[in-house]
Length: 243
Image (cartoon, rainbow, N blue to C red):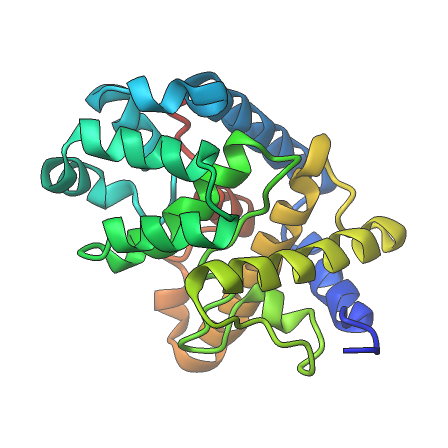
């Protein structure tokens, strides 16, 4: 599309709403926790080390991904640590184009569709955060056509490609636009490194979720929903760090 990709006005409104629920100090702390998670992922999987991972370390990686945490043992039992370690390394360091590597991991995890959606991008992003971006269902679910990324980008920008891997590239374009726009406007500038965009998009999803719950659910039910700082930590897999 030739016009703007980011809905800056809406993005800033979401950030103002988020700052009513979470302090800037907390946002910086969450981004720092993401940086520590990335350091842990890199220590385990960067530069070809993923192929040698055993069950314990693979379990730590899986439990560091919000949507995969409860499926970690089932995935390891079904695939076997050796197979999963080799496939993770192939995705990170293989010679095939990036979309093909993601599509292959999607096939490997076909019996675990939730994990297949969130795990590949989480591993890519947190192992090499300067090279790859995150993509989770709470950011953009092409089946439901919802997510925090959709809420802050123009409807004219097509987020969906012909395959999971091609969609990852489209999501990456949108993330880059939001990140650059946010740096100029100040809403993705929290914390070190490239993790301000992650924190921002998790905040957007949290604010959206609270709005929907407030409209649909009872006040008693709303009381059991985590406060925004806690929710953002959970979404980003840094609530109970294991790596």
